[in-house]
Length: 639
Ligand SMILES: [Zn+2]
Image (cartoon, rainbow, N blue to C red; front, side, top):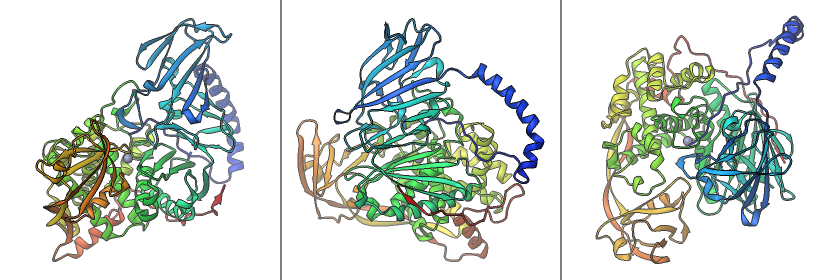
């Protein structure tokens, strides 16, 4: 789920020492180059497109947008993206109440709808001013929302772009910002309410939080980090969060041996009630977590944060060709989400291990849970990781999320990342690992401005660092649906998978959520108590045991025992909101756990040690050494 970017690297080759002499020596050449490039710029640079976003009516969730188009062609077209943030078509144009256009002198111009998300203006040769009103009340990191508490915008969901000037530089002005609210965004700011972006793609990769948020900034290993939290300060401990973020950013930048930004912004919301999810951007992330989870399950916050932060490389800069250039008008199919999302989850685990936020036992237990999740879905034998990536565009549909219909590219992708890591180690006799694969793609693709060729590009990188043929891995487990022989992979690190059959509570139904959307019932077991109580497929679950249904419901359900009574508040198509009650049944269920082999050799032990550190056992010839300097920390400042 995401949008494009052009990586701008902060570390330029230059004159690190003797700067003044170096500058003098180069001054003459510099001036010449400057004159030449200014001359080229004035020809190549398209005129700026200006946007004014007015927070017209927070209580009615209404935003008014004005777009000022510079002089150009007489006939111009404007497009509002049909998708953004999630790989799902959501048709944001459904929220546009009205639109009109005039010329720069204020005379009305004809504006005509071409399709549901595209408009055409005539006689715009001397420029045009387009105004429209849009309703924005979709909460969470994948949405756009204005209410009396705050505004949070993924700008692609509210701003149209001129089709002939998507690459033009952009200026944005925010208007009618309520007193006491400030604006946080990774965009460059000209003033507290004016921002600039080099083009539309970068603009819409930069979310805006507008409210009376709390901010705490810190510096680590040369990077500047902003932590923006818009929530009740009683619900979180800023110092604890900042300390964890510090560990994550240091662990990740050292692991990748790269920091392709100067400033990175974390934006958090901790709502009471259903929430959950994070959205990656090239220079920021927006994360929503249920307030209870932040307090009780801090690992949920560090996990999603490590995941979204790692995305600044994987998917934002190490990017599949199939997602470039972004086509905002329709589905963008890619076979690579198992890598871009799933292997980001693999890295999430390694970064947390390296940061000391989880230990080896927690890591093994999480791997066992991921294997259990995959093995329990019958579709793991019918849908490949690549097919699941393509079918991401179906995830908004409840039927598609049924276990017999689909697997998750997050789930299988994370496991493929772990198995690929072990396969690369085996093939290279410990001299390379997943880290070298990722660094190879970062150096050879991302830093050279290239995109990789989906699964083939991953295979190319894995083979380059291991000097071995890994075609079998990609054919069987990435493009194919062969059962993954877990023990064959895990043996090299002295582990095996055991199956445990346990009696578990059976609520008689299964439910799923579309990212941070509501929980809906996808299957009801025939003859079950749930069916007798009246539960139906399609019912939306509002509460479970008196608690709002959301992220933490899975853990709550896991705590039930056979015979316990279950109270569920649902909203159904025919009966509206009502409460159902029944006794949960029991069933035998297989789960998977990682166990030590009876005999572990010194070699397996050494391989395991390197694997859990995310490092190769001995450095391959081409690898760079770690930057081991202690990261500097300036005191955190609450603003
Ligand atoms: Zn992700």
